[in-house]
Image 1 (cartoon, rainbow, N blue to C red):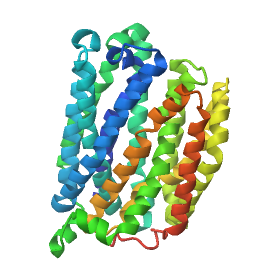
Image 2 (image 1 turned 180 degrees about the vertical axis):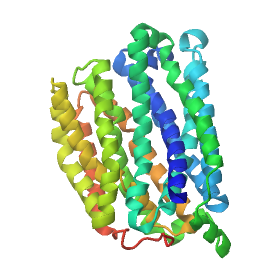
Image 3 (image 1 turned 60 degrees about the vertical axis):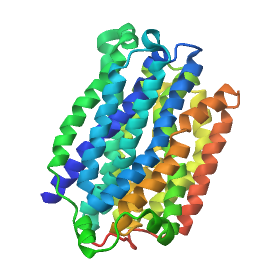
Length: 421
C-alpha cells in the first residue's frame, strides 16, 4: 500500500504539471491572434510555436538546478518546488492582456511565463522519473514507471478535453475572446492540489541511502566525467523519441488543420481520441518490458519509427476520412509507445542514485529542447518554405540515429543501477 500511495502522489503531481504545460499548445489555435495579431494562420502559429520552443530551452536550466537539488536534498523537495513554479506561470498566462491592450508587452510577458514553466518542467521530469522508478519494485519497475508517461499524456489529454468542453459550451466567439484563458486558471488551481499531495509524500529509499553513504551528491562534473556513455545514450534516445512524440501529439493538431484541411474541432477531437488509446497502452508496454527486457521495446520504437514516419505523414496529409486518420495515427503512436512507456525507467536505471536525477534530467532536457521543443517550429518552417516533406525526412533520420544508439546500449532491466527493490 505504501508503494501504491507513493506512485499515486508522484503521478498526480506529474499529471497537473504536464496539463499546465500542454494547455499552451492545446489553446494555441485560439490565442495566437490575441498575442500575435499580424499575419495569416501559419505565421501566427509559427510565432506561438517559437514561444513554445523558448519554454523548452528553459528546461535544461531547470533540469540542472532541480536535478542537483533533488540529488542533494531529496526528490520530494524538488517535486514540490517544480509544481509551485508551474502554478505561477499558468496564472501569469491566464491574466495577461492581449496585444490590443498592452502592445508588445503582451508577447514579452507570454515568453517570460513560458520560461518560468520551462524551468518548472525541467525539474519535474527528472525528479518524477527518478522518484517513480525508485519507489517501484524490481519485478514491475517498467509497469509502474510507465505511469510517468501515462500522466504526461493524461495531462495533454486533459488540456484537450477542457478545450473541447469549453468550445462546445461557450462557442467559438467566446473561446477566441476569453475562453482560452480558462484552461490556465484550471491548471493553477490543480497545481495547488498537487502541491498539497506532494507535501505528504515519503522520500525514496534510494535517496535516503545515497545521502547516508557520504558520497558527493548531484555533481555536474562527476556526471560528465564518470558517466559519459550513459549521458550520450540519454541524449541519443531523447532526440528522436521526443521529436516523434511531439510530431504525433502536439503538432498533429496543427498539421491536420493546416495541411490536411480538417477543421479545428475535428483536429482536436482526433488528437484526443488517439491520445486516450496511446495513454492506455503505456502500462501494457511497460509490463511487457518487465518480461522481455527494455531493449526489444526500444528497437521496435526507433526502428519502426524510422521506417513508418514518411508513409504515415504523407498519407495523413491527403487523408479525408476521420476514421482512417484515427487508425493510421494510432498505429504510429503505438509503435512510439515502445519508447515513451519505458524511457523514464531506462534512463533512471543507467545511473547510480547520487547523480540519478541530474543524469536523467539534464541530458534529457538538452535533447528535448533541441529536438522536441523545436518540432512544431521546424515543421512549420518547412511548410512555409514549400518543402513540408523535408520535415518527414528529418524525423526519420533522427529515429534511425536513435536505433543505432539502442544497438550499442545494454538492456537496463538486466543491468539496472537501481539496487533497492
